[in-house]
Length: 467
Image (cartoon, rainbow, N blue to C red; front, side, top):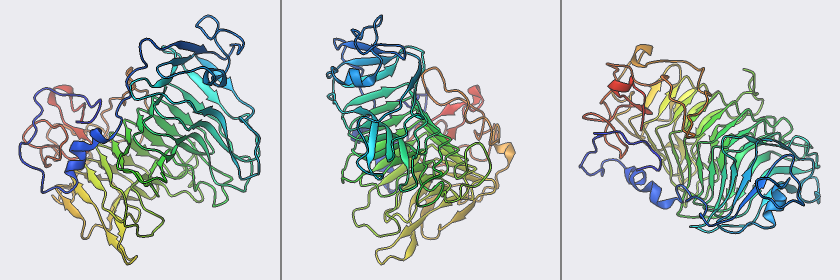
C-alpha cells in the first residue's frame, strides 16, 4: 500500500503472483524503503512561534513570537515545533556573503536535525498562510531560498516565492534546496522561482507530499532561458538503496520540466501526481527558449550509459499539455516502471528512449494499464515491455470515455487535508472502454480487473475515486 492512499471498501486484490510484471514488486514494496510520513513532533517537545511582526529578543511563545527562523534555529531540539504565523516574511540578505559570483548561499538555513521518532517541525499555524518572499535578496551569486542540510525535518504549509537569479554566470537558483535525508515536505506552495521549485541535491528517504511547484522560470541561465526551471527534481550524488518519493504533488507552468530525475543516484517513486503546461514561460503560451517541456522526466545520465542506474517508478499520475513529452525515459539505462498513468495532448505522450551499454539508442520500460489520449504520439516503444495499455488493446478513446476533458481547472484548491482536488477530468465515465481492462499491478482497484489510467471508476461517486 502507498501511504495515505485512500481505502475503498470491497476493493479486490488479485491473489496471483505478479511475476509476469517486471517491477511490480517495486510497487508493492516501495513504502518500506521510504521514511513515508514523518511522525508528528513529540508531544512533550517545545513549541515556538515566529511572526512577521515578531521580535527576536522576545520569548518565542505564541503571544511573544520571534521574527525569524534563524532565531528558532538557535534553540530547537529534536521533537520541537516551530509555528509560523500567517503573513509575508521578507528577506534581503543571505546568511553569509557570496565568496564569488558563482557561489551558492542560503537565505534560510535549516541545519539542526531531528531524529526518526522526534523530528523538528516547521509548520503553518492552524489555517494561516506564511509566505516566505525572497524577491528582495540581491546577493550576486546563486540563491537557495530555503537550504535544508538537516535530517528528520518536517516543513508544512509554507508558501515560498521570489528567489532570483542575480547574474548571468550561473544556471538556476532554488526555492527549496535539499541535502538531507528522511525529511517530509508537506503542503508547500512554491512558485515564481528563477530556477527549480524543490531540488533534492543529495539524501534519501525524503517524502514530498501534497506540494505544488508552478510558474518557475530562469531567464538568466547561462545554458539558456528556461533550461533549469523544473517544478521538482531529485538529482542526488550519493548512491543509495533507499528512495526519494513524490506523492500527491502538482507541477505546472514551469519553463523546463514538471518532475525531473536526471542524474539521480537515488531510486525515485512518484505516485498520484500531476504535471501540465510545462516548457512555457509562465502566464503565457510562449515556448521557453531552452526549456525541455516534459511532464515527468524519468532518469537518465545526460545520454551516457551508467551500469549502476537506479530504478524509477511512476503510478496513478497524469501528464498533459507539456510541450515535448508527458512521460519520458530520457536515455535511462534501466527501464522505468510506468503503471496506471494517463497522458493527454503532450507532444509525445510516452517516449521510452533508453541507452544501451554501447551508447546506442534503445527502448526501455515496463508499462501496464496506461492511457494515451488526444494528440500525443508514442515514441521509442519497439521492444518495450508493454501490455494492457490503451494502445496495446487497440482502444480508440473519445471524450465520451471520460467525465470531462479539459486543460483547465487542474490548479483548483486542494482538499482541506491537503490532498489533490477531486475533479471529473480524465476520469472514466460510465461505460468507458477503460473500465476493467487492466491487469493487477499491486494498486487498489474495484471490480474484476483494474481500470486503465490514473483514476479508478466508482459508480456511486460518479468516477471520483483515486487509487
